[in-house]
Length: 195
Image (cartoon, rainbow, N blue to C red; front, side):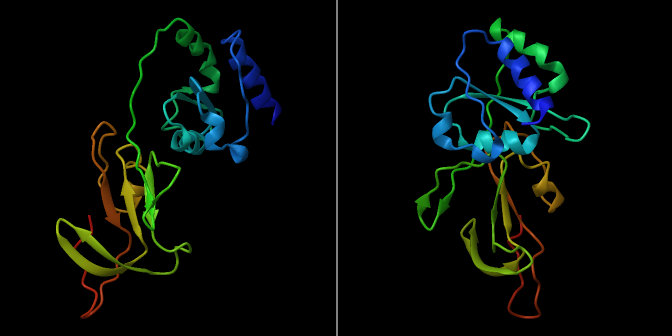
């Protein structure tokens, strides 16, 4: 770990005396490590927060933006310069917000990981066209495109929005989708189900 991160971790620990801490790097984070944890603190950017949020079951999570000068930190609550605000958690002076997550099935099997932001459906190499059938509101059509993004409100202001989707509030209990770069042919491919 960088010295900067190590110092911040020590500072964070000082606000929770007597608590058991498990510190792990982003690359080694696994779901079973987050079982029966009261609070997950992420120190990084939005990617770090998203990975942990996709894995936790019933824990609280708080994102700390480690490098606010380089990271938007749209999902983080405080910056690394505001760590003293962790004292408020010890005083039970905090509010919580629920985030909707997407359950994902692949070939009929429910995956272990959820998605707090969006799910991409398409080819592994996105420069290849995806060819699929889509059903929405009792209509089915075959399409070719760069894939489909299915988003929660939390993820709707990032990749989903850049792909042409309309952002919506993270409190809304719904999902939206957008077809990325649909192919319009002369006869066979004339997609209508796009959003």
